[in-house]
Image 1 (tube, rainbow, N blue to C red):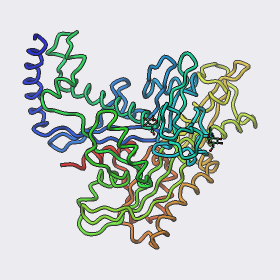
Image 2 (image 1 turned 180 degrees about the vertical axis):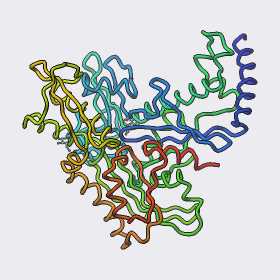
Image 3 (image 1 turned 120 degrees about the vertical axis):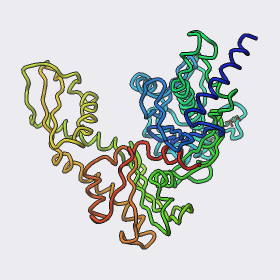
Image 4 (image 1 turned 60 degrees about the horizontal axis):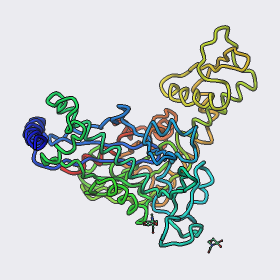
Length: 446
Ligand SMILES: *[C@@H]1O[C@H](CO)[C@@H](O)[C@H](O)[C@H]1NC(C)=O
Ligand SMILES: *[C@@H]1O[C@H](CO)[C@@H](O)[C@H](O)[C@H]1NC(C)=O
């Protein structure tokens, strides 16, 4: 009874504060980018402003799309799961998006590249009784305590990531409403702010979702199922390049536009050519490289460090301040960091701790790194030519170029794209390329 009274009071309070903030009347819709490497959730207020909702555990905008299934049945999501990857590689599922809605026979190449075991549905009474059949849906075998095994589908993995983001939204709204100030510290409602939101008529269970333009019906349907399993109602499904174009308001322009969306994430490159005529958008062609992204540049940088070490192209330091060892795993961490710093600097230094106890100091120039990565850069540009060729178009037809994905920050890539399209065309890079897709998804409904 007391709980109900408290809830009633809170509903009034929540409604009043939400209304004052510009969230009134309509149920809230979030835009979600369930990515291969990272996921992002964005929310649009009634006054039109879009904001990215930080992860409720780390406060970061990007949630790694990584899930660890522990042997006791517990599930970890995001950065805590990433931290488990070294210790339990066989139960830490990343890149699940590469498997969603696909059959075992379609993913053999992917399976070979991951430490976890990819198998067909061996759940009891599965419609496909033979889990080794190439037609069985691809999923992951997770060992539980007592030698039992559980089959986890990519849909389950996606649902865990979505459910985690949904909690972030609830928590975030709870925080901005300062509900905490009005509640007893150990109040039941504080632990479940969603109850109050739902009672106040603010459902945070509707989403606009995005899928790659290359997804067919089975992958799209499976993605939608992941959201539904996490309790979200899917209001609309956008293709990712379309969402990116919407983020830049290109659908508000007059007349016909051709838009090239260049999306390079952690491990995949997708380029899409869009035809836009006001609100009508269609994807004319797509091309890409399923195995090219920021992580390939990390590996290239690590190789560069390794070769410098081998050649002795390093300084030996007197002091010992390095945190990472000169082993491959340590160099990989240094490589990721050096690559990011080289995006804004011409020359960087980094150091590792050698087995003799003395630090080795590397100096890496941007030019040197770009030369070492020349093959990656030519692979990165090939799909751009291809989407144009597929439509028998030249760069003259392209009105806008939109850059998406973390690796699109690479200065050399921007330079190559600018050269390709000519200096008269501006590349759209104003929005943080990691959040563009979620931003567009959140802003599409008005
Ligand atoms: C796996 O098999 C179980 C048992 O028949 C079924 O309930 C489930 O939907 C299947 N999952 C997929 C993704 O096919
Ligand atoms: C299951 O399928 C695999 C591959 O198609 C085949 O080699 C195996 O013999 C089948 N097993 C059974 C029990 O039918």
